[in-house]
Length: 201
Image 1 (tube, rainbow, N blue to C red):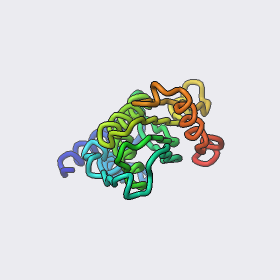
Image 2: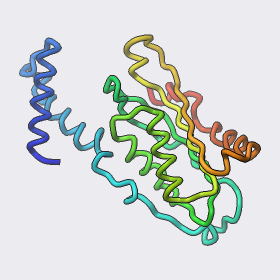
Image 3: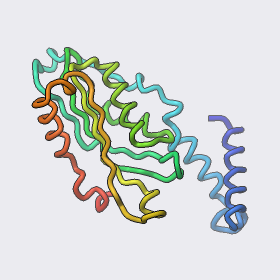
Image 4: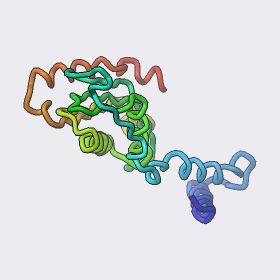
């Protein structure tokens, strides 16, 4: 992040405040352009400057004592910005995979999801990007990613209701083996989608 980028973004925020009818020089808004610039460059758009491969920590399945079966990681926090209205959407990602000799360190799932989420997104693309990355890097026999989220663009404008959006991506053996796919989906749907809005809203 450069000081020049920060300065330009601060100027844009000041102009935005003027255009909506505010006074960027009044007491409550004097520091807002600087705060917003830092927030966007250091946090909300940090994923553009992160390499998700930096978060890979792969172990062999045999070292972990795993020979067969489904590995499920649930309730991975998702916090992103919808590219259509620049408003947040948030929820949880749930991931299931059947290893083929390689497993990923548990905490790394959240870091990888966070890297893709800290960009302007639509939930469908975010789900696909996480699935593609994990399938390419882990090379599992099968992979399924499910994301449940509330979109504040629907909550604070338009219909003004906290509706949920669920997206899924399926790779490998889960596409062909229907009983295994149903088992994985059942495990994924045990995630904390009930009460999501109450917990985070």
